[in-house]
Picture 1 (cartoon, rainbow, N blue to C red):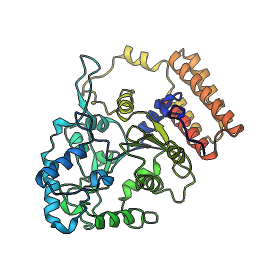
Picture 2: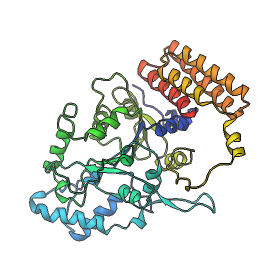
Picture 3: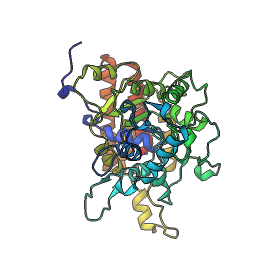
Amino acid sequence: MPETNIHEIEYFEERARSLSDIASNIKTGNCVLVLGPMFGINKGQRPIYEDIKNFLREEDGSLMLDNEFQNLYLVEKMDSYDQTEIEEMIFRSYERFSADNIYKFPKAGNDESEEDIYTTIAKIKFSAFINFSQDIFLNNAFDRNENLKYQFTYLSIYQTQVEFEKLSNDPEYKNAPFIYNLFGHYQHKQSLIYSYDRFYKFFFKTLGESNENNVYPPEIVKRLSDARIFILLGFDLKKWYVPIFIAKLCRIGRENKEDRPMVLTALNNTNLDNLTYVGWLTRYPLKLKFIKDTYDFINQLSKIPGVINEPKVPLGHEPSNNEEEEVLSDRLSEEERNDFYDRISDVGDDDELLNLINELKSIYENKKNNGAVKFMTNTRSDTKILKVSKRSNKINRDDYKVEFAQIRDRILDYI
């Protein structure tokens, strides 16, 4: 197969309505964010795990770590060390790292305050966060914002009883995002992966058929199964184990399902010297779509209305009659909204969907809602393009179903 030129890569951001498609699935709870070892970066924009490794080497200059495994800190000559000694060293190194050293997005204006990358993603309404790390930087970002609820647990291959999980049956936590650390928790030292024996035990356990080893909690399985989009940030796709983990993760809970989620991944952590490999990543079973830059992507996504958890309106503020009439006069009535919601939810054919879009467009034209008319016009155009792509075999069945569902959900979210 001829090698691909870097300029020939089609980036997801370059597609029309790409961010709005993601935003629509975030709002409906159908988007999972997967954080790789290289997502967390310091102020110098270097991976945080490099700081942790430097702290470890400062404690013991003879310590040799396998760089292939990035933030797992696998000791090459484990026979020379006591397990407790390594566990305590990793614990102290994470405790030593200051949260003030986490990379912050630059201010865009005088009214904005700097936010670190974890604070920003914590505000976005992802249904779940799968964290290929043992850190709790994301947990801490949630804890700093009293308006944000979350649930948390982590994998411990040698101890099923985890000590630092945060779970609740309280109704207000029902739809709260779920954080799951696949590499354990640095404060639960027995959950850490720091030897080859521990890594391969973890590796084979997580790759078991379906979820037979109970690696993923039931609520995580449900959210993975319901997700229409997976966003992978901070991965070096050339690490031999990364594509394997990705392929497995995207099949959790889908063993008896025909649909496939869309999988987006950033390329700025992968050396693009040989793009033949990148071509392989775009084919079955991965079928990845590429994002140019992790942090620019997150920054743009966080600015889309409705994507982040906004502070609640203070109690006691009620719109005046004039305000309420102005807001509601150009929108669907409750009866219209319920009718279209049911009909669009059940639609499975692009011609039928086009008819419903035309109906909605006519209603909004009568209500003189120019913004809604423009939205329906653009959505109709997207649907027609998808229809033509299917008829001319320019898109395969799985990708068609994913894009059709995204258009449908975008309309449901809008109305």
